Image (cartoon, rainbow, N blue to C red):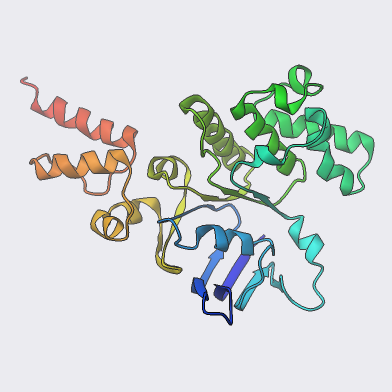
Length: 287
């Protein structure tokens, strides 16, 4: 499915002295199979943008089109469109409420009016997607689990709705390295194996380097860059000028080039930097 945003502007406290422009004439298209990373400094409009993608906010002006239908049109079936787009807020584990993991994940599918057999299949599928064993956790209280496991259960509740697009706002916030890696691996698999279109907001340039196929950079409510991670992370000066950075591998690459090493200027992943450094080491070895 496609999502097209046309000239989207959103203002908070419109008509008052506190009026704030959160998004200013934003246009973009999210294509089927994209892993779109949205980055920007605090207050750049990232969270406001993703809340428009399933109609939680209404634009001050502009349109959000889902498969060509205006999400805020007069006669559109907004509920049906929203079910195609799963939104995972920051700290989604705070929204867990059922007495067991299975019941919590089943809540959405149950409200869709599905059969008991279909609901059970979706719960099992969603748990497998987030790397949790059904027999081990299904009948446990969500609140008996670790923070990382609770986060995965909350995400499983959205996956169980079978959205065509999954949107996540800072999905690794507050997690330890192990929990963070588990979430990232899970998203990598959802995108690669299930071909789920994913939109992710994150402050971590390293996470974006690992996962995103495309990056959207926001600053003060405007799109200042849109391209592949390689294109975006090669613009270190621009990124720093708007209060961002680049992945650790890109920073190291830049320093090595400044020190005289013969390296491409657009390396941003640890594995590719390592490969080029090994090449230089082999070339420098005496025969």
